Image (cartoon, rainbow, N blue to C red; front, side, top):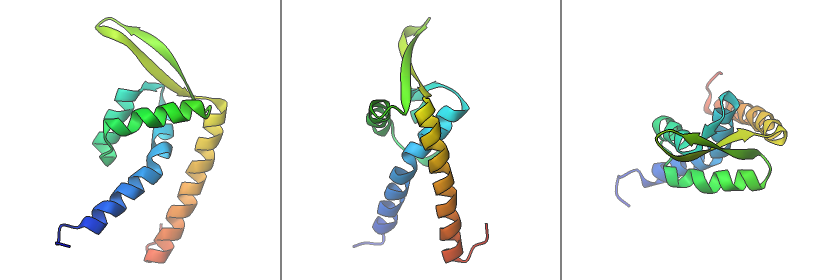
Length: 114
């Protein structure tokens, strides 16, 4: 293997995948949004691509975590907006708590104080 940091790349991908649903729910907790806007936010902040969002949104809708509705636009086709359901809010709060507990534990292992 070359020094192209392949193990690091793989670790980064796995970390991003693990935090993806929580990240999407955090965006939707701030405001209702459509998939492309969510994807753009994630791309700008953590480098997740657009192709990852659409299957996740379908799965979250199937699981009852989000609902969607169409909003007409003056400059093109209607946009499908998503919002958290009550169940989605509950899962978001639980995952957020779990994430914070996990980060504290990892920081402890790394010797970092949070």
